[in-house]
Image (tube, rainbow, N blue to C red; front, side, top):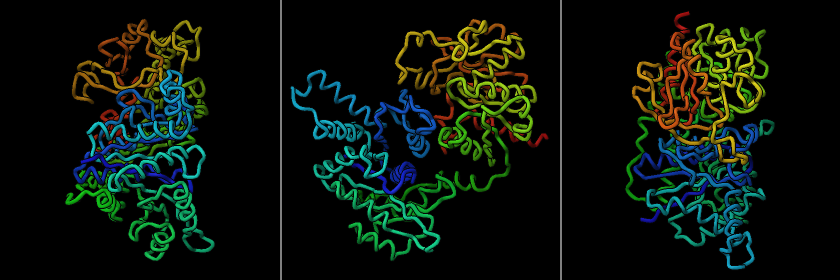
Length: 537
């Protein structure tokens, strides 16, 4: 059987939830027994999001094989419990880079290189690449941006060509739009959806299913009206109404019959009903917690929720594992100091110092570490958060007042965090960090070993700086232990303070591997420690 392709496009407005609709569709098809993967095509010219400020595009998600990707790949992995890869995220920048490189190599035999056919051919090749591996029954492709945007046009044209080239039952298009509610008129308006679909059809792409993001229930009359004017089959207009959490969306889509319609259009017959029992239990536990804790997330991008998306979702997963509602309280590190730290963190049951880059907000992170360390509050530092707990310990316990990372102070006499040796000759910023999954050997008897329950783990990284091993003997003598190290290089991956109730910093990003059905162990134990502190109070 041929691999089937589902394309998910968006119209009217951005941030309607194309990624969640794509992931929910994939989850439902997977739950029916199909082998499914999802890929994201982004229209921006950056090669990848690795050099983008989080305020621009949210967090940069890192895959197991070291790709810096769109945050929607995190949704895909969390929903499907599978790994994605470099092949699952393609940008306009990657497409043009490939085509221009080929042109320089003479691959086009002197022809004039044009958007059609050269750019669109490369887009089509990438769209079909995962399907041609033979590993999947269905490949779902989310196209970033909004239909009608100039930068999205080559992707839409590529879909048009594929619709023309492929058998009808091998490819379908789902179009997500907005049906706004006008409070003054007390009615839902379908015109934005009609215009969005018309724009898509004018480009030659005919959607098979229209998913309408809405705050209110769509009546059968409104659905029929949109089907008529948008030229889709009656019954193929479905609603995506606001849900309590993103993990409830697959159930709403199933109730709307989205998976049944997709299976019918793609020619899948006699598939079982989706088995969503594990996800249903997760949602039930999420809705009925037995405990509640407040966790401070100390970072410098707190104005934008998507900047820490994987961390937030990891707390949801860990909260369910502990039957605990986790209230994540944002604390802006740039405005945190010794004078206001008690006010900001005094009511917190745990403190997480978030990853990041650059000097802004670093001293606030050091203040947060000191507060948690000296008051016995459960502490978790990730990447830069781990590095700042090392800096804080060096200054306050070892007495090295100028201790710092060379990222911000190249002249410190105590460079406790230093640029990795293989990074010193690197001048290109994009895609050159230590990226992807690496091994970490855990010290027996340590907190990390107890959390993971094994000797060797693999976690994902995204960093250029590391713990300076020259100072390790002084740290360990004073009470901060390196309990996780890379077996090949000796790089310090985990630090702990054994005398503290719960104090751990990781150079890696454990949030990237947490899923709804397999919560990340450190987050689970961190939340458990926060519950214990609150109950102990």
